[in-house]
Length: 425
Image 1: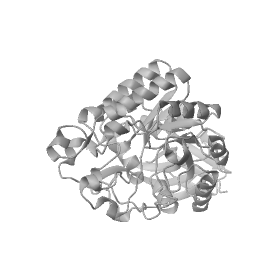
Image 2: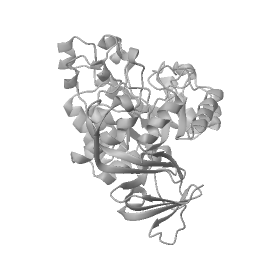
Image 3: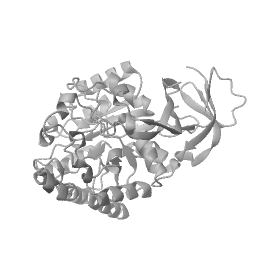
């Protein structure tokens, strides 16, 4: 491997509370020095003057659509999109086709990701067989095959007893459980936030209580069991209140929020734009602001993409008949930096929510630039802005409402384990 010296950049490493102009020396795939590296003999020099140097980003929720949904996207295309946005680790939910409930599926995903060679892809295994919410999956076998955690994605559990047993079983193997809190009966056939805009548009709504009631229910089960749970893609203010209290009470819970939830709200649904058909739906300005505050406070640990690429036909029907989701890997950094420009987060806090925070959720020694750690690095220009040009995206999913927006932040280099996997220059 090349010996690389990244010099002259503003190095931000939340794990070490570093935010200063420092050099970064890399050899054999690892960080070997942070600071003055004048004596370091490098094969490659990267001039980072005027740029930010930070740990590669860790995305806790991104669907790559492979296996089984390759008409939407695949591992090669989406990992290319990821590295162009500074992302070096992706966590993938198990709702593929077939579902990730057998070791063979895990091994296939890992093999294809290794062949692409761009991003560290860590799949989640299914909590229940076929995600049907009835019988527990073979979690031990999934863990041995390489699953970082388990999830039932958006599929409900048959009853609370199944949920309890699933949490107990996962805890036995020290597996992290990822949960999308949703009361399926309350959500019913809804497609937007249940409020005045939904009523005016005549669209079936999903009340905020569909999330918060499910979250409260799960928190009570966790309280009795003492297990660790991570909540994916929270969307409403009440969920933030419940999470905040759970943390005060000492429960081992964490959460993330998708970047688009911090910029969109129900008022933008007025044109029946199917690109805004999401799950969970965009909600009120009050909800959006509560999520922003929770991210700033650290109550929400991580900012994720919740990447859901679709083929054009998936968004071509009437609003309620289209498939939910946004393609978001290539706007994650830009939307995050917009929060910085708006005074919601400092730049160091944003880097923490994109790197060290997610790494702590996973319990992995990533998201940091300490000597000896894997040299997963993002080098970006925070002040360079550009319009979002969907026609030139690496992702095959062009289903984004941010097309035409001008967002800050241009990634110049992405390194995975000391290897340059993306260069804009």
